[in-house]
Length: 305
Image 1 (cartoon, helix red, strand yellow):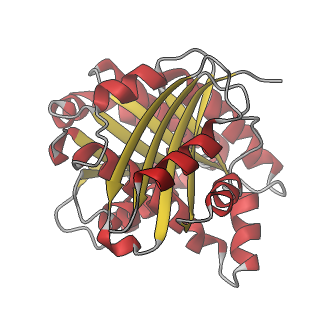
Image 2 (tube, helix red, strand yellow; image 1 turned 30 degrees about the vertical axis):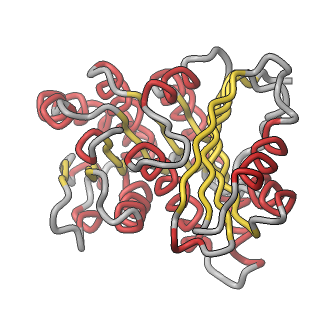
């Protein structure tokens, strides 16, 4: 079982910092948090987290010039990052791409984190389609980030906004999905469960060849199809997960959760995978879930159509 200091939730850029603060608060500060930005506003309301200020000159230079400058500044604080990374085994990196700091600094931070020996799971938000310039910058940033992170989840702000509108919320409220994802991963690795997972299990899955992604589903413990539907509605960019060769699945349920319910959900979530897929299962009880179940699934070895 891991200790809280071994997991770092890192927010890079203003959207990443906002999500990191929310996720850190949701998992009751059971991991460490690091906020990286050029804008001091991103560091508001964080009393015990770490911050890395990349300077404010960045903001006056116009969008296109920002990523290289942010990357350079991220590189210049590598000694500080090395020190922060000493106890860390897993980094959950949250960022928005298309602007300056997220696009320029996220991949450089991921490179430094991976160099220190940590597993890096990145969640990167892609801009709205009506922002073609930002989208172009974001695509380049995503490619670089994908090179250094073990898993890079491509989050579509377009889909996030659409789903938020359907629930009568603003898209910024879509952070709930990110928070659930981070909370699920942190709980999975920090707490003892019915069936335990550890970092070696995580490494086994993320080191498969091909693309990777994460899904989160929630619903009634007796309605596994509802839970799967909820997971497939994730605000991710289109990726066909059928045929994945690696799957780490963590199931959480209330006090009444049975192993038969765990088995039904696990079977449903894994039936579309490659017949030789490596599946690692974890399960734990969370009193606050009552009759619901939450499933966090990490899929790897996904091949593009």
